[in-house]
Amino acid sequence: MWTGGASRARLRAHRSRGRGFRVAPRRSRVARPPRACQLARMPTPEPAAPATDPAGAPPARDVPAPRRARGALLLAVGALALGLLAGEGILRVAFPAGFHAPFGNRTFPWLSYDGVVAWSNQPGYQHPSFAIDARRLVVGPQGWPSQGAVHVLCLGDSRTFGIWYDGAYRFDAWPAALQRRADRAGLSVAVRNAGTVGYSAAKGLRLWAVRLADLDSDVVVAAFGLNDHAAAWNPAYALREPASRAARAALRAAASTRWGEGLLFAWRRAAFGRRDLAQLPAGAREALAGLNAPQPWHTLDEYERHLALLAAEARARAAKLLFLSIPLRPLELGENETAAPNRALYYAMLGARDLEDLHRVNARYRDALAAVAAREGVPLLDGDAAFRAWRARHPGEALFSSEDLVHPNRRGADVLAASVLARLRELGWLEASAPGSHGR
Image 1 (cartoon, rainbow, N blue to C red):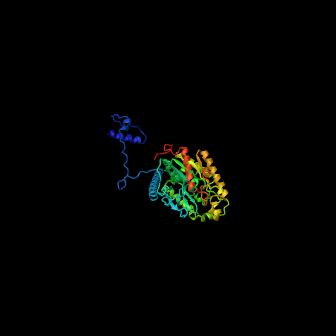
Image 2 (image 1 turned 60 degrees about the vertical axis):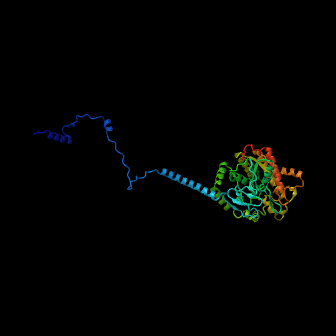
Image 3 (image 1 turned 180 degrees about the vertical axis):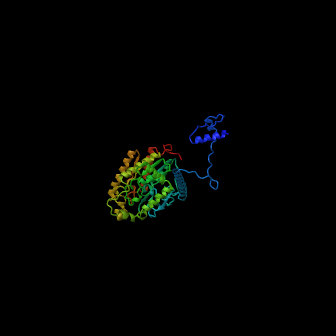
């Protein structure tokens, strides 16, 4: 008996062999939903759970190599910055006055090595006639004589510091005489003496810009030139300000930190070599004796550039700047009595061959000072003219000792102070209401 099941089996066999008829598959009578609905009803696969290590913590994500390198660099820079800040704080506590070491010179025992300005007055030094404060300023044995409304800063060399010689070293500074005269005149003025033995205009500029950067001064009196043309007995001591403003700013910023100051101090101590002030006069004699044309610390062009930078510094600080030219002892008074045994060395150290050549060289630097003052619009006080006027009124009064060609004596310092005070009053700079004053 033929059955439907057997018939379906034969049809499937024929279809598999490619013969016979094809039987359409039986369709369900239930209508299928549209395809979009089928997709919507398809279950969404769950995201695979991250594998875990035996401890149960998920593994670290795979961060790209460049991102890892940037992160490590930022971490290293941050750690370095924190270390430098911590070290800066420690160094400031350990060295509150900065890095310095005494020269060991018996003639100038108050001088010390200084990485920022080559050498400076030694903080804390005490002398019967003066003292050096923490800022390296020269003060009286009793400290500051006045705290006036107008602050006057005096920058200069040994003639501003106040040393002179008449068989023994004396100390009479014209800034101290200026303070006394201002007090007697009833003026509210505080005079600060930053004069340093051996300083040139470049060193005075660096001292003001770095060491005295936070000292608010209304008036600045700058007296340089003698040591600019003096012989450079050790070039490692010379300072030359960078020509670029950005380079100057970077140098000053670095020197203002204890880290930078310490590096400069170590470098200068290594570069100073065997000739330094501790070995004078022997070191100077070896360096200068027999030289017919000693090289100056600074040429005329360098001197003029540093003076112009002093004027720019004053403008940046809104301070009033006065240039002061301090004269030599008059040529007609002849030779220095104490220079005879070592006359060649004496003049070589001053950058000259003899007395007449010293006056010629000094006159060229005075002319350069006058030219810069006119170009920069800075008032200039000619100390030589002031001394001539004084001698005309007091012909028997000596302003220099017979044993010192370059440093005025006590009377000379007082004449300089009187001239400076008169010029500052003429300019109207000693009034408490003057621009730039701060009424402290």
